[in-house]
Image (cartoon, rainbow, N blue to C red):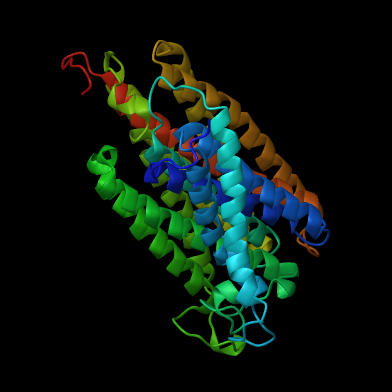
Amino acid sequence: MPDSISPAPNRGAIVALAFATTVAMWAVGYVCRIPPAPVPSPLLLAALLALVFAGGLVAGRTTGRGLVAGLATGLLAAVLNMLILGSLLSGNTPGAITPSAIWWLPGALALGAGLGAAGGWFGARGRIERSREINWLWLLVVVDLLATGLLIGVGGLVTSWEAGLAVVDWPNSFGYNMFLYPLSRMTGGIYYEHAHRLFGSLVGLTTLVMVFRFFRDPRGRRWRTLATLALVMVVIQGLLGGLRVTGKLTLTTDPSQVAPSLTLAMIHGVFGQLFLSVLAMLAVVTSSGWTGATAHRSPSARLDRKLATGLTVLVIIQLLLGALVRHVESQQMDAGIVIHISMACLVAVATLIVALRAWGVHRQIQPLRRLGLWLLWIMPIQLTLGLGALVAVLFRGGQGRPSWPEVLVATAHQLNGALLLGLCVALACWMYRVLEPPENPRQAS
C-alpha cells in the first residue's frame, strides 16, 4: 500500500528533484516557444504538466514517501516556475497586474502539488529497493550544471541571432520587472534576450540553493569554499550580463542613455564557461565514487596531471578566441579566425594525446578510461561543428541575417565546446585523485 501519510521525505531529495523538474520544464518550454513557429499552446501545456507528474513519480519511487514526496516536489516546482509564470500576470503597463492573478497563482500552485502528488502515489507502487542511498547533493549539482549548459546554449542563440541588445534596459525589461514582462511581447530578438535573462535567474537561484545544501549536507562540508566560489561567480556573471547591455548601473529605458560594451559581452561569455568548470569540479568531488577512490601508483602520474591541466587551459584559451570571433565584426577578424583555427588544431592534438593516455595507458582505472573515451568522441564532433560554422559564415559573407542552419551549427559548436571543457576539468580532477607518483605511494583517503 502506498505510504500516503508517511513523515516528510528527505529535503535534499525534494529540492534536487523539484529543481530537476523545473529545469526540464523550462528546456521544453523554451524550445517549443522559439519563434517563428512555436508549438501549439495546448500541446506545450500537456507536455509541461506531464513533466510535473513525472517529477512526482520519481520522487515517490526513489524516496519511498509516495504521495507526500510527490506533492512536495510538485509544489516546489510550481513555486520555482513563478519566475516565468509572472509573465502571464502582467497588465498593459509596467507594474499593472491582471485581475486573473487572484486565481491564477493559487491555481498554479494547487495544480503542481496535485499532479506531483498523483505521480508520487503511482511511483510508490513501483518502488525498487536500492543497495545504497542516492547522493542527492550530487544530483543537485548536476542539475545546476545542466541548467548552466542550457543557459550557455540559450546565450549562444542570443549571439547567433545578434539579439544581445534587443532589450535596452537591465535589470528591468522595457520598464517591467524582469519576471513580469508580458509573454505576449516576447517576440523576435526580445524572446531570445529576455529568455536568456530568465534562465540566468534560474541558474542563480539553483546555485544559491545548492550552496545552502552544501552547508546542510555532511557530504558537502569539505567543498563549501568551492561551492561558495560558484555562488560568487554566478553573481558576477549576472552583473557582467547586465552591464554588457547598459554599460553602467541605471534603470533608464532610453537607448541613448546606455553604453553597451562589446568587451563585457566577450568577458561574460568566457566567464560563463569558467563558472561551468567550477560546477564540473563540484560534480566530480561530490560523486559517490570520489570518496572511496583508490590511488594507483604510476610512473607517469605527474606527466598525466600536467597534460590534463594544460589541456584544460588550452580549451579555455580557445573558448576565449571563439568568443572574440563571434562578437567582433567579421571584416575585422580575419586574423582572429586564422588564430582560432590554428589553436583548434593544437587543442585537437592535445586532446588526442590526453584522451588516448587516459583510455589506453590507464584503462584499468574506470573514471579515466570513461572520460578518455568521451573526449575521443567529443573532439571530432567539435571540429566538425567548427568547420560547419566557418563554412556557413563564409557562405553568408557577412551579408544579411544568419540563417537557421548557421545559427544551429554555431550554437551547437559553442555548446559542445562547453561539454569539452567540462570533460577536461573532470579528467584533470580525477588524474589528481587516482594517480599517485611512485615515490609517494598511498591509498586515497
